[in-house]
Amino acid sequence: MLPDLSRWIKTVLAGILGALLLVSLLAREDITVNAMDFTLGLQVFEHGYTVIDIPPLGTVRARTHQFPLLFRVTLRNINLERLSALVHSEQPRALFAGMRDDLRRQVVRFLLRALALAFVGGLGAGFALYRRGRDAAVAGFAGLLFFALLFGIAYYTYDEAAFREPEFHGIVEAAPWLIGVAEEALAAVQDLDAKLKIVADNLLVLFDSLSDLGREGGAAEGELKVLHISDIHNNPIGVSLAKQIAVSFRADIIVDTGDITDYGTRLEAELLRGIEEIGLPWIFVSGNHDSPAVIETLRNLENVWVLEDDVAIFPDLDFAVAGAADPSSQGAAIQIPSREQYKEVAQKLRLKIDQAEVAPPIIAGHHVYLVEEFAGRYAVLLYGHSHRADIRVRDNALMVNAGTTGGAGIRGLMAQGELPYTMVLLHFNRDGHGWYASVADVITVNKLDSGFVLERQLLHQPRPPLPLQQQEGEFPRNGEEKEEEGS
Image 1 (cartoon, rainbow, N blue to C red):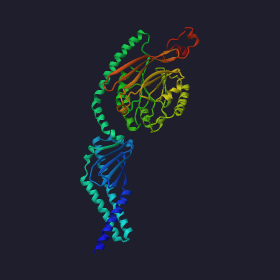
Image 2: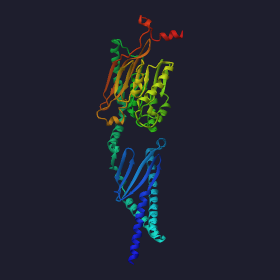
Image 3: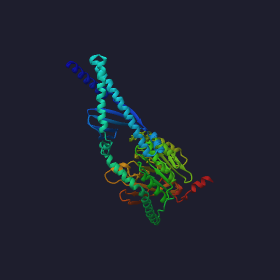
Image 4: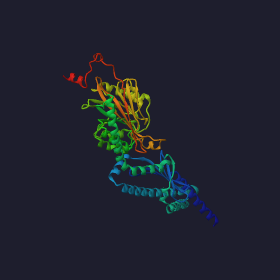
């Protein structure tokens, strides 16, 4: 009798060990829940946690059930096109409920598969030990019942509410703070447009006063006004502010020098469709945070000109803007290209400029490495990237950095000290050589108190040498040369 009992105990233990081995090795399953791809996993003899891995951001976990199982869910991929279609076709609550139900069904299927693995593992261990079908079957059922017991304990003690107080590891440790920031931003966003309109109107009053002062000193308001913005980084407030300033100051053209998004995803690009409401020509050159998906979306907007290495000509204004895309925007990776890559892009753009019907007074790029290749030309070079507004002369060119019109986006919230919203309104006039920038209004709007600063700078853009007849005192009036050419 005792030998038989000993044999039964050995058979059961063999079945449990075989089940543990096979489940530990093979309990993995890839699943798809709407637009998201996950991998489900199971670990034995761990504390009763459910762990959600979000590479490369880190993990979120909660103590949801009793020892000894750990359930792991790893996010592998998000299909942004599918997600965008779902967001547009369903209400958020219905979408979330459907995803939750689908996930539960697939988790149940995964656990049933794990039970099957437990039976097979026990069966194999029993057969390897005794080479008899009956003993192998007993071992298989022992492994099955062991895991059924563990799953039962987890099921009856499982508490989804534990995720109300989760643990964060990795970059996502900032998640509770970011959630609080998002809630505060959503609560305040309805007031922002009204505040920005007040700021824009007050700036306009100051602007008119500066214009009057300028006229007394001989620097009249420009014939053409270009609003230079950059580095919006997904911040809708930046777009709204640019709209208010452009309308209030009666800008003719907006030039955006890139990084309009953070990660260059199609979902981010969909948020930019409000640009169409501005109505003004919006010239865009991509930055290192943008991507082909962003470029494609912007290209489909009626008032947007996307320059990849080209010249946009406005015959009604007798004006042109040249620009080139940042090399890294041709893919999804966020990186800063080498100087050699920027030189190659600049060389292509230089050929387009030389062939253009109208010489562009403005050359735009995202990074200073690109535009500085044109420092030998008599032009205004617009760029961004550094998030710091700056105006300076280099060789024959006037270089203008708009800073960050979006306050650097989410990184602006995390930066030490405040990064304000900045942009530059450039006033252009004409002489015998064409357009030149005469005045720059650097506009700074603080985030914390909605205060603003308008700094007017009288510019000294280098001009080419005058022809001999003009040096002797014969200066053509604006447009006179073109009239003579056409007669």
